[in-house]
Length: 340
Ligand code: CP
Image: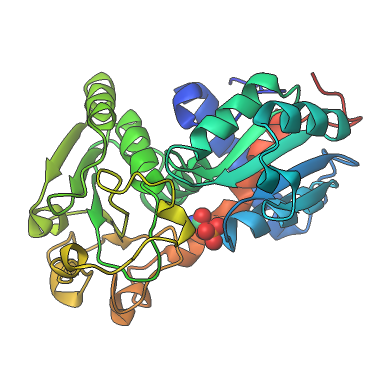
């Protein structure tokens, strides 16, 4: 088992080997069991993780804050609008200074073309682990929780399961591409048959599809991209119908800030891309419905589906806690607060 993680950044799962991800899943399951048993784990006693948020969050913020508290440490919330980041303080200065004051730096920054660059630059200068809480490209905390939930439901071996990541209509806000992008890169590493379905105009970047297909070839699965929604639902074992924004025509840097118009004619033309009873009837009889949440109910999905017997969205959301704790427990300094 791979166990050498102290100081390792968690910016993208592309930087984590499969044995490392497997350890992360093992530790997540251990921490979930401990939590259920009421067993105290103070492995990060007196340690501080800085939690910088440039955008809103329910699951990510609370899984990190509750998680570090449960490990004996402290989560220090930093609102990006009231920190000097808002006046343009650099990633380098922010990372060096926070490294001297605590044990990890975590950040959500989804603005297209800015978020990943900023977090990656912090990782270059930080002397403590840097964790990506979602950027314009990646959401590794979500992807690892998804994988844990899928293994709980279908067993450790996910080889050849048909898993469909399906674009869905939504009006609530412009969503980054980081969730489907992270999923389509990660799932083929576990040998699944991954389908990516979306209307024309909501493509993920070409390099993502190329890397996903290379992963599938290496690990014995497949990646299929289609604009046929029904084909993606047909026989699927797991479906992820979820909206994502259009990065191709919307590179203003405002994509995730809600500052661009959400509903336009192009989007409205695909209002039928909604997860309904008729569509899930095409799935395997034991399929699972998953969603990173928040869901745009009545637009992305009917209540009868998300509240129905195949939905495992609350397990998926709960696993955000256990996986976030595993990331912190493995990468931060351990008892005594030793860090790089
Ligand atoms: N899935 C997810 O990241 O949820 P939040 O935006 O509430 O953190």
